[in-house]
Length: 117
Image 1 (tube, rainbow, N blue to C red):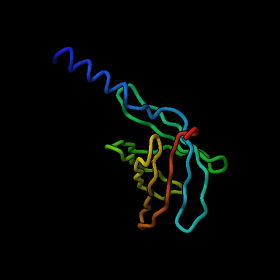
Image 2 (cartoon, rainbow, N blue to C red):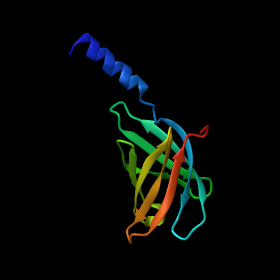
Image 3 (tube, one colour):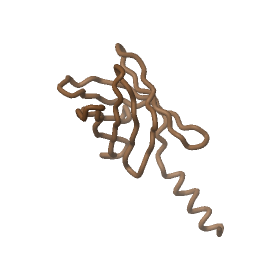
Image 4 (spheres, one colour):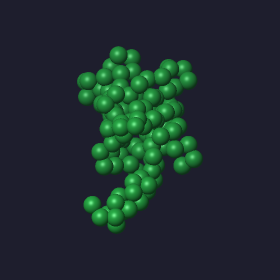
C-alpha cells in the first residue's frame, strides 16, 4: 500500500460519522399509537454495534444481530415475548426510518435520529 492510499483510507475513515451515543425516535405498533423511544448506541473495539432501546414505562430492551449494511440498519428484538425483525433505511444525515415485522407478518413503524436533528 502506498503512502497516498494509506492516507486516503485514514481520511475516508475519519469522514464516516460515528453512530455512538444517544438517539431518539418513535415506534408505531400495528394498529397502535406512536410511542416515543430512546436508543443508546455503543461500538466495540472490533467495530460491532450494540444498541439498547428504552421507554420510560416499558423499560430497556437489548437489540440483537445489529448490522449496518450500506445505508440500512438491521436488528431484532423481542418486546412482550414477540420476535421482531427490523430494517431502517437512512433518510437523511443521521436519521433512519423503517419497519419491524413480527412473527405473524404484521408491520410496525420505527424511526431513529440524533436528538439535535
